[in-house]
Image (cartoon, rainbow, N blue to C red; front, side):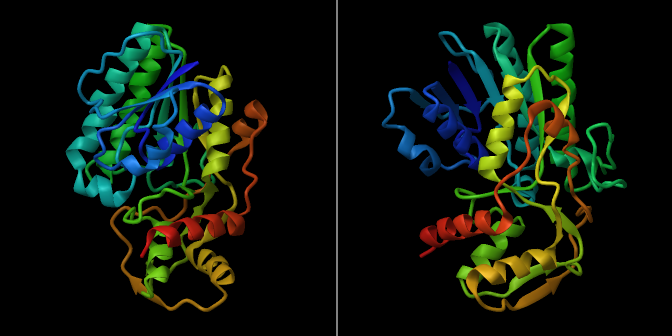
Length: 310
């Protein structure tokens, strides 16, 4: 197949490019490198089946030749990045999604939208089912990302209904692994970088808020299965094993073999207190669930981070 991945030089996008190349597909990676990193895809450039295009999908994208599938992953994804880039975040969620849907329509390609657990906001129910409409502050600092993705889901479903486009929507929960940006700002990159640099680990709030962590290989497998399914409604892909921030630090201490000193800071505005997926749909319809234990995934991620920090 010939597959387009927008945001393909990002953390998740690059892992998808790698998976599709390993399966023998042709891959067109589109990225404007606003938050992506050319180093993430540098090893693929020697493949004749890989093409890298430095383009902004918020502007019209025209491609020649057949296209079988488009996976739209272009967007700043960490709170640090979308706080720094609020308008590009809104534009890629709205205009970028519109343009990629238009490309899919022109080529009659299957389209997958990378949505997010952030569409649930600071949820009032846990775990979150796909049927939950969320608790989002549209004008808060996180609203630029939350509402961009909510709009992206709405326009994807509109194209599905109005143009009979073959679409998928994956709601991605906290994912981690090699190639995450060192400056990502989320929990795992923050703490790994702080530990490697000999700094105090930052805990926001009391550390009792919960997160669920899915290793990137598990996430990619879930996305590939969703692409092959005929399920057009949004689907949660993530790890339902909920842990507090303090629990996570204990696992990290097991890996490094010593106690890790911490510093407490106030909880950021609209930071969710709980975030955990209900993956009953993925289990039933895709036969998917995460398999990589947190300790194993953290070990691999830690080694990758250590190799990049000098």
